[in-house]
Image (cartoon, rainbow, N blue to C red; front, side, top):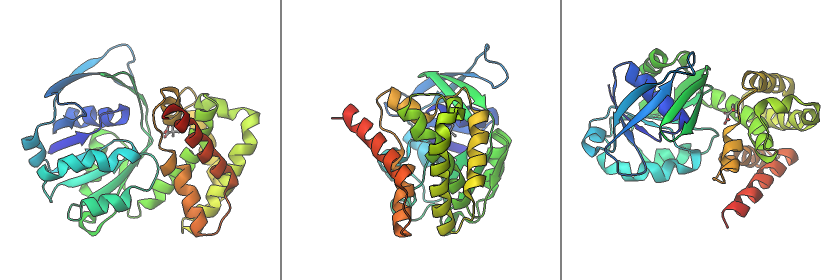
Length: 301
Ligand code: KPL
């Protein structure tokens, strides 16, 4: 399949390499005007050896011929990153958007009213120690699902993702796994960013009370949104991720560390906004949202 991937950060580059291994014809769309690049990749099983992957970049003709566009930029970059591609994009091109958090869906639908639009969420983990080096650091589930009418018939795209990186599955209600991942991100990301600690450090007893409160608040909002869950269930899932990714630093931890903007508005911010619609109080998530916004404003005066 002809594919363009927009946003080759750690997760984007992982998918680009895995899909290339499946013989797809994939080009990267990058921030600069380079026409080719080489990425050095180490598989999950081998941290010492790397393989080189050569990619063509930024070719508008290849974009026009693309049947699939995968967007793996941060939530707040989606619209700005997509806009310059619009003149070249076929309306038949299936667009898959994968980022942490929720909240870009409406704007994307307005920007691309004709294209099939799929949202995806993954628990695969990757690390990009240098701009051209990618390590696959953890396996996890990927969910994909339609957010508009045109994408309802595109469940075969999940098969293509599954062949590249398993397990990947189609979900008929994609907002369900998006909310599940949101809950985990609400718990892990702000706390690890504010305290500049690893995911595993959250197992320490001093984090029990804030994690319990976050899960309590998120469970109320999720239930009000129609995705029934309990604080205990969410807390258990958060604990599982804390253990499974104990040595990792969350994406928000890295963003704060490198003085970059974070996805907080699409994580805790989205949660608080939805809570307000349902008249639910979420003081702990509200406080974390504000704390991260404060850190961002210090870095971007
Ligand atoms: O998605 C993540 C992130 O870092 O953004 C988690 C699940 C917290 C893993 O680090």
